[in-house]
Image (cartoon, rainbow, N blue to C red):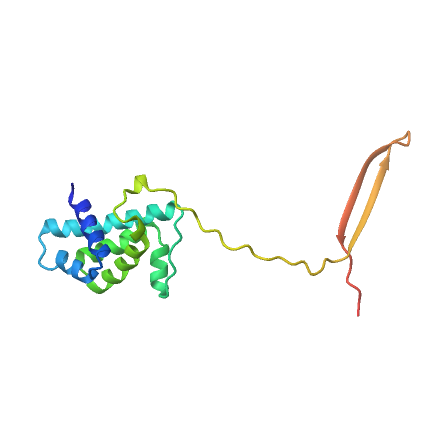
Length: 168
């Protein structure tokens, strides 16, 4: 098993066990060897991949109170990686904790899943919007008929438009 998969497994197990995410981040980032740091970055990368696969399968993006976090959760897979991976390598603890917690909560029901074998997530349809027609404008219809030399109908043209509004 490679370091990224081991790191993802450890990250998910830590979160599922109710352990504090900052403890996990500290364990992998503070005084960690190069292999442990690669494992952490790999775990974060795998987590983003899982989140992106779930979104592609129809998972709704979780609502966020923070506009910056909402933008992050809506961003594309590559944009998300471009934002997170440098911070993981630089160990931006507060930012990582905030963003990884949001990602982990979103994917928790599918934690440890292989994105290639994810079940279809049924998209949630918005509730139907009621439509009430309160009135239609009056219409004017005009028809012109053309005849051939024998008096047979050659063609017709019908035009319809809104009637002019009454003045006053």
